[in-house]
Length: 305
Image (cartoon, rainbow, N blue to C red; front, side, top):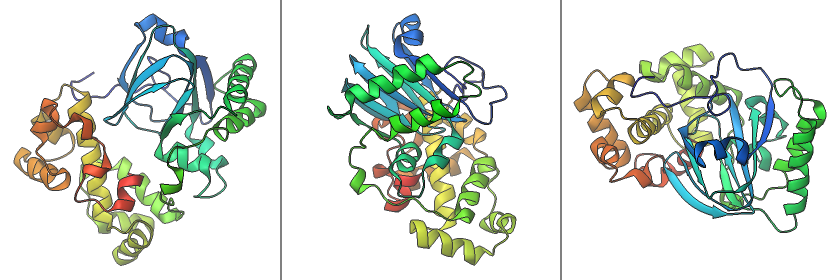
């Protein structure tokens, strides 16, 4: 693993390898964390969303630089690709549920709470009226689990019931997710070609639209330009690498396709309001990945990046 590589797993500590098209896995918090002194280091999953459910105990967690301390009963929903880590109070009890990205299709619309929560991430207390149901659903899935690489329809139905039993804090303030297939395609292309610094027209051509049409789609749904979306994603990846790896600023610039470290530093300052050395030194760690600190990114884009 190079210094600038964020550990990526299918399940924590396990090589992602060839991820199954559809999978669902549940285990107790203690099953893995108790073997690691109750500390799960910073990492990410590129093929799954993850839901942490604490019934008793305390957890300190970071997700893309956002830090929070919670006491059970509580939950955390971690979107695909988010860098996260946990420190549990010893003997904390609860469950960790991992679901392949295709599970999001169970969300019937962009406004569906399931889809919003698993796409944007969420955390909070589990309502008193739902604690017994959540615990029962987790135990039932654990009992049902045989081949997690090919979960049964019942397992997935119980997983959906579990997610829908959670109440996202501040859900009323969440923005509506875009429901445009071309915008979704644009996001996928950004992920695949992030470090290549392709022009907007290159993306538009592969989507079968003009640059003006792609700009109109982005403005209508996110109130930003295609370039804003690309730059916000580059900034987020830069913050992740600076805060969660030992890579130097020069290494991060190189890994992200910037031929000139000085240009990277100017780009970073323009987008975040401060220089990359500040995040690397830890002075701005708490704001890394926190969209509210990114002056160059429109509000709707901040919440969806």
